[in-house]
Image 1 (tube, rainbow, N blue to C red):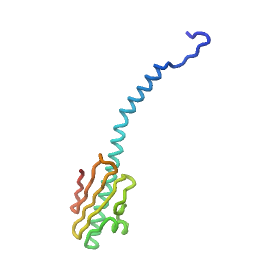
Image 2: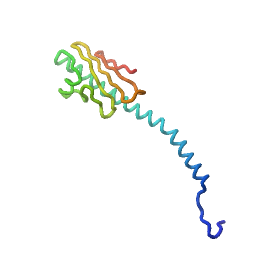
Image 3: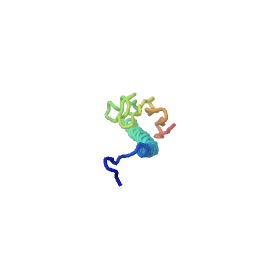
Image 4: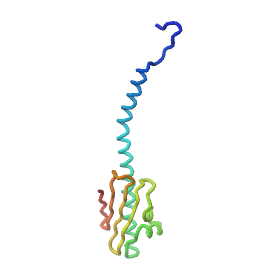
Length: 127
């Protein structure tokens, strides 16, 4: 029963308990969200590498040699140019090209993420 002239309100202890519960829930949820974001960035980088591999095969078939990322981008076959980052993954792409070989490296935006390398055999490796 309420006493006359007295309002019902939350006590400081009740508020601290609610804040503590929210903090625990947030700490539990943040790690999976960060992992999901990292996985989506890595997946987007892999997709770019797959498209670059197809572009290199097409160029080799048509012109007889592989091209660097600038040449592929100029032809409209690459979503990124040399040293450019992909807006979906923030990975930076660099290439080393010879007539019969190429290596494309996708460098991650953060050090704890994987670096991916694509070679002329079509194999993508992740470190």
